[in-house]
Length: 121
Image (tube, rainbow, N blue to C red; front, side):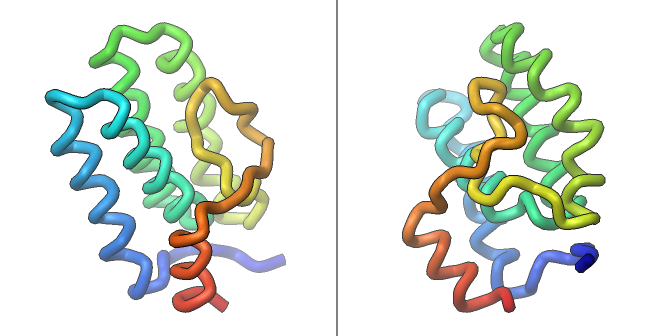
């Protein structure tokens, strides 16, 4: 079993970029904000702290748009996502929202897959 603790340095700028874009769009374009949160989730889901940070941002987003389903769906993800990352049992490509089953693997967008191929082993 491989333990994941720290995001590879090469992925960090792309992860932070997605979080920054989500914050930028949060005030005027909810769909774009959510897309960037999902992309940050895919990038960070293998690593406990980045994974937890994205679920925290998704929870805050749920409150901001007053979406009870998202708020309730993010609570267990926030509590258990980081632990699952640490032990390497996250579903690959999962976008992290409450509308997606938390254990469902999904296709990784091609541009993100290229980053994984380049910066992870």
